[in-house]
Image 1 (cartoon, one colour):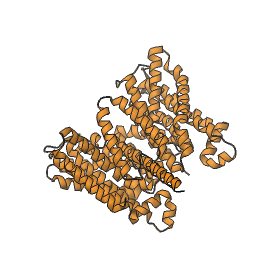
Image 2: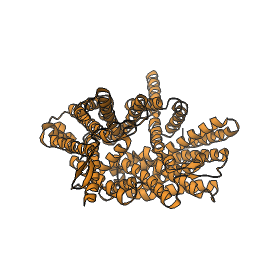
Image 3: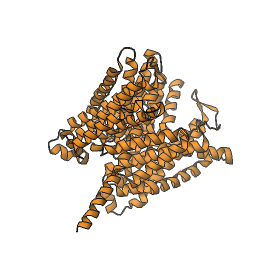
Image 4: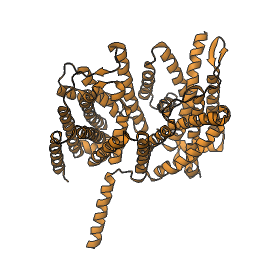
Length: 289
Length: 311
């Protein structure tokens, strides 16, 4: 019993982080058709900021979360302003926006990742934070993992609530349903787009900050998370926030069980098989009505 | 230039390049080989993706499959046969996969083609570990440098010729029709499904054959090297920076990229890649049609000036 509990818990904890990363990416894609392939690099920046805050300034990583979120939000608005504004404005068709923003995303990926290599080198960095085991119902789990799970789910739910109940959230949802209609009723894309892009990067930054509490970090850590986030988005459906949350947990569980019952080298094979199976059978996502 | 002129120019260039092994140092020849490989990959990628506006990230998958055909057949197969077989394997895979995924568009298509590449890579890794008991394979007797050079040169020249032939054929027209409006093309009687599968497989053939031809250069082959997503990304970048709707654009940008990579990447790896990223962003923002659009712009300007002096 405790064994099953441990396996499920492991899956859910990874899944929580996946969900958080995917939510931000999905919001950007759903609203602006920007497939930001450099999403993971901003996750990495969040991790390094937290690491610096903890080792240099001595700040508690959890207390540092809001600062990381704010910094990445500002960075996101700036990146949108410098790079994506022009694409969205000058592209003749949605497909062109997708293609060009993908290329700019690659550019950002190269730029940010290698700038990080220049600045911090390729060594693994890390610090120890709440690394003591806790027993729940006979299962042993690390305290820091439980903390990052709680915060990942908390941040995700906060974002969902924001989308559900605030005016901005309503504007975002309207824009996703019908960009033209939303503009007709006076929703301003020039405000909403940078705001949501910044919000997406803030989510990535928080995820990175949380990951730095458990794993060692390196400039290349972001890329696998981008790929996983893409899988999660496809599972949950492009543009669906709730779908991303559920898809994240699902993928986390699939990975945890797959890894346990088969072998470690099958983990990615399994993820991609799930991705391709879902895309072929239900191209609109698992939870599409 | 008409199609005949372009084809003649391609043949002349290929003939001129075939003299290089006797004129150049080993280093320069290796550099030329990389240039040719990327030119071939980018041209064959643009053949399908440039015309149809589909963004395929499967190049690494085709390339790697070709390389593994060489690796598995290294003991018995002659080099030329392995190259041909590598291309055909990739083409068959592309046809099979294309039938299943070519109804997807935009980001979905990009994601699933990338995922397929990774799926093949992980499947081969798993197979090799579980059944062959190795991670990589050593090619015991690689061919000489000159046959490799000629194989890659031939494949690249064929890719350019095929792209030229496709561009002015019914297939090319159908592909461009799909690119500008797929619904309309279908309404006008184009069998979009068939045309897409044919063109996708053709472009995969060259990627696979180039992979098979280049594989022997590494002498040690493992999935991470030959399925390196960087090969796929770089191909897409080269084609789009050059101008994916043209044929000359990708060739020119393949040359620029390979030279830049060779000279800067080894000395300043991180700085070089950062600058590459910045360059890419600036190009997409301010020159979205690629380098080829510079020529268009220049031509348009010349025509405008002529028109003004005539008037």
